[in-house]
Image (cartoon, rainbow, N blue to C red; front, top):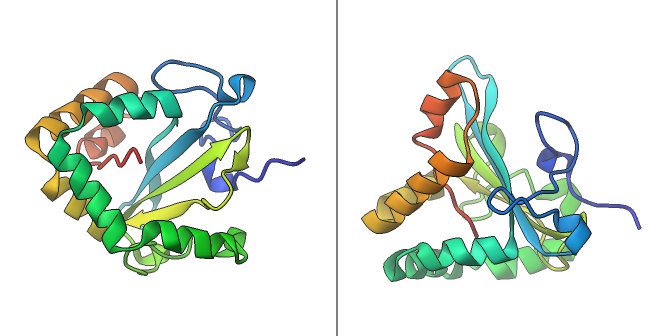
Length: 186
């Protein structure tokens, strides 16, 4: 069966599928482990879009990172997803032609992606296929800003450490932009 990962989740550097966890380097295809891919995009003043980071994180490492977040931050994220009925929206989208629709609007606000100055894409996969009932989605700039404002200091420090250890483009200009990026890790 053919992989159905949208092209937006391919590596910008190689145009190939990401296969290794950013933390433990496990090949998720070889081990058939569920994983998430998150990419962050920013539109510059000249309307050029740049990728701030792209990462694959295996489910075991994502759970470890989740445990490092404060209770307050974990609950705030759960409440935000519940308030916006994200799981219900993903299930509904999976029953439609999600491949054509998933990247057009922020799943939280409905704001169009083409107008966003900043947004993240998140997908959950196993073996090159979207997890059933869980199509990828967009988190727009308003929700990213809300997340950043409401994370505990403890969690912000943990995510800063994660960024410094595992992420970051070689380009110094992009590294500066990455300092303000919000990681979702869901």
